[in-house]
Length: 305
Image (tube, rainbow, N blue to C red; front, side):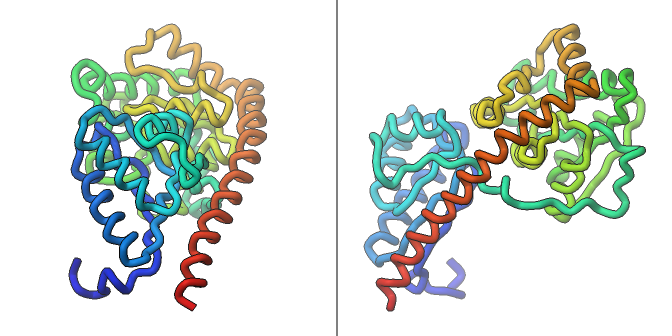
């Protein structure tokens, strides 16, 4: 784009968008991917779409774009079953479409020196996408929901604190939750490895940031989540804990019951052990995914040599 490197000089494109190609984000990203993938195919560039969420696709333009994109990429990896189904409903099942879990589950976090386990217990991780991507009643009740969670955690002496996972909007939410719950510690950390370390060192988490939840679940940290797309339900299903996903309009009694189980010592330990068992299998799948990625790259190098 800026002339630093010519497009024709690129051997491999690795796309780690996370969640861009969907009705929820509009047509533009999918249209750009389709156009670029076709151009890259002509010039011999290998294209890999790393594990990410896809779909749904309802409009004619976005369906045509996704079909054209998949026609021209070497490997596309939906992160879970719903994304796989959304994708293959448009393209049909193909050899270059392979389902793999989120690959960040292999990364180890770093616990910062300032993190005090005696002060910080259950981590709340807000996400502004729950405000600007849900709309209507769900958008309006998200902040009160998080405040309710914080208050219940306090009642259970669970030492709740808030972690800003990313961005100024998340910081605004964190401050609002803290104020609404009578003042909770708010941690802001720029180092993603330390963010993961904080989550892994927490007793439990309640959040809406997808990769924050991956960081917790993959290390066996019991978690509850509320989300704005299918990827949250699928993530918890992959980890064998579908009951961990709750709605923002959940009743007070049900929320109190779920949080009570989350902070109960025996239940917390049982959930943690189950999560670790599921995580081992998912990490093995991620290793297999990297083998497929390296295979595509090796084919590119063979052509260059």
